[in-house]
Length: 328
Image 1 (tube, helix red, strand yellow):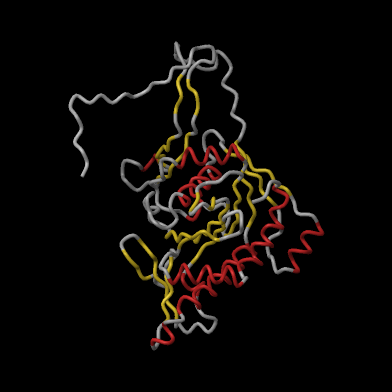
Image 2: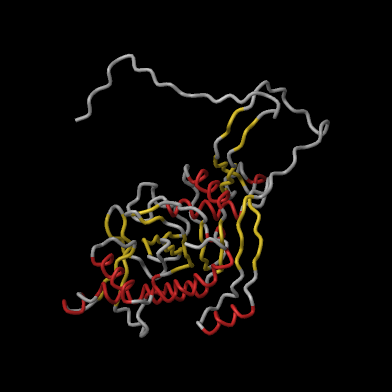
């Protein structure tokens, strides 16, 4: 997509232009008409009006995406951070989707490596914003168009009071590969969902890592300001964000405590520990009464044990004492 984080503001400009092109509009119409979008538009009225639902919905989605990109804070995730995120996302989050996990109300995040793919197209970026169905209403506010969430169990009406986050996934060719709509207060969709696939779990995991402040700091963020000339270009194009790129990297590990500061077990080997999620109580004083709040903390993969000891890797072997049945 891009090799230099400094190119991200200009990439945003190209994405905003591309989303309004006829080629991109035709692709949105095709996905909506085929029921391959996370949301489905419905126009209320006679048959000739209802038949225009996909075209109308595609136009509203494209306009909203252009605005989303114009408001988005910019994030660049380097290779090490992408690898950490993918490893941690292998075990999906079980916590309800929370607004406070979002690093910004609207954002555009580009990964240095692919986080998935579809039809040979890798997913390299995600744009998001807080969202309600009213953001995709017609300008006259007539309520002529309604939206439904496209779930594995069928279409579910999206009521006006719905509150959540919209995510759009992008390929290096600036093609929107799909989208997810995640309601706040509910768990994310299953890992094997048709819409969003694994991508939304990767994105939410990246947000968790970035917002994790207690315990060992896992992520470091540096800022790369936009040039004055670049900011003027953005303003002429209607971009509201200031163009600062936030570089998201794995934070340097803290040094171990000096000898004598703590009593350490005497291990005779080292062993790998996979990333895992720890459910942490935020209000331990009232935990027993049940009025506390919990959130997940991610513990990254690491090697445990003294540096001068041999590394031992356990391999699990499955032994069949009978011939397994043949699947039909």
